[in-house]
Length: 435
Image (cartoon, rainbow, N blue to C red; front, side, top):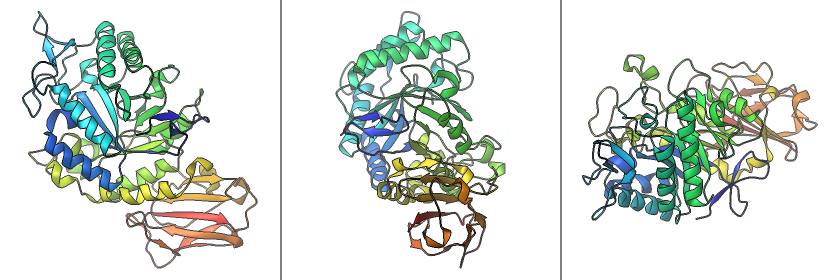
């Protein structure tokens, strides 16, 4: 596989030969900890076939990942003289250790063309705040653990390091631990792989470590609550920061996740997921990570909070619709476009917000329309002389990839839709190109 790098404009991720690339991810946080090799094979091959190219997983996992053994009865760390799990004592003894299993999964992902977003640890191991913990990291052992793990995986080509793990940096010691782990990872892999940080919900890495030299690109978590800032607003804030760095939503709203973490509110569905990821794409992101609530935890005992077995969740609607998303990205050179929401007149940040990208060179506009409602473009905001009577209009159904003439562009820039209702689930992608 081709290693990943930051593009010269500092806005995007590219392959080492400069090829276009967009991280199309899934959160499989418990992949290393919960699944057998055979189950991991099913997960990875399914996701590769659906168009994903990036899988985010945690080595020291969230769900009692230190004390609870993996599928093969192995724990990642030994205990020290005080009976505490010690990051300086990785357990590599005997046949098929915990880290052998990690290696096997990373290797199989590499064979399938999947990049692995590897979190050395979940955040409760350095800032418990909530969850199981325990806190085991200090700046000293964080450096050693990061260096050891990076050295072990450095022979692969498909790694992206993700520090943090869903916890905020609140004290100087937290910053010292993350900085030390970043230095350890850098020293361990010789700078071979990109590094980012996964924050808590409604936060971005840019709020904590944007100016750190080790941070190659920003990752935000638009998350699962309401109301919280939508991903497109968070991406816009990152996009405007200096120094310029790429940014992505590394944990958007999950399919079948209880709204606001409470099943009494109902569940997010494929429409929520689809609208979020297309808006994120047209907001200048370098990647976007889908997730399913029963897959991140590799659920085996469904209930009202985790609603299905993880294998049953693999083919949920939004996951299957990722094929359309990837096909669009592969077919269009979005490096020629920049996000500009102002090309849409009166573009309110509400349910009808239209995300837009424009290209002066291509004389084109990409629009993610969430509910199929009528709206209008402002010709004065376009970076080229637009004649709306001479623009080619294409509509794409994000559920199926079907292209149609459903979108109509008037001479005044007004876009309407025919033979289709407006409302939830009627999201549509519109492409305009000056003839």
